[in-house]
Length: 206
Image (cartoon, rainbow, N blue to C red; front, top):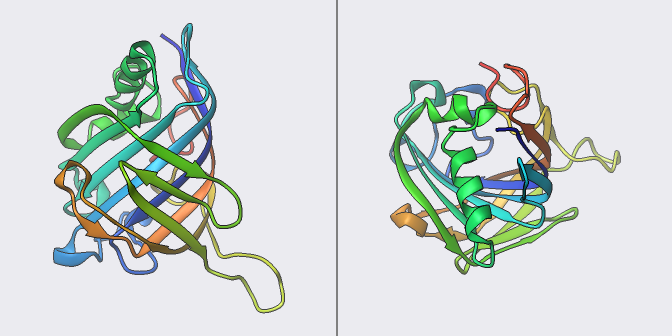
């Protein structure tokens, strides 16, 4: 089957600024772990004839060590008004069953907590925000050089959801899937993933 999704994402986690996970460094959250969550706001997408445009995908994670060491704990939440066909398609994509970049990610899962419905909101812009099951998070970008009017970005990270993403501070608290943490770090960018994406592109370039 062929699939693709594109839109904007916002990720937050418990690591200190800047989170070392994109460069495969050891997490700097409490107990040396990275507790995080993110939302993929899907503007366009499909798995064969299943339209995924307008869906929102929440990804909840616990990374016990650097990313390439594996043993990740991962759970997925899909917006509660998604159809059964959309939820099944997203579950298959996120489990890595339909190929593409998430197949590589799935090889690093230690425990997959499942895919469930839940209320998800997403607001884009200079200071995006999201909520998953009532747990809300906001993004405060780190500014670029004084007077430049730009924001700090990271490019060509070993593990990245986009070739370049804005980084900043996060605020918010969550306990979805019993993975509880206070957010410190955040990143955001536009993304585009597909089942025929070449190895080494966008997600997981190690």
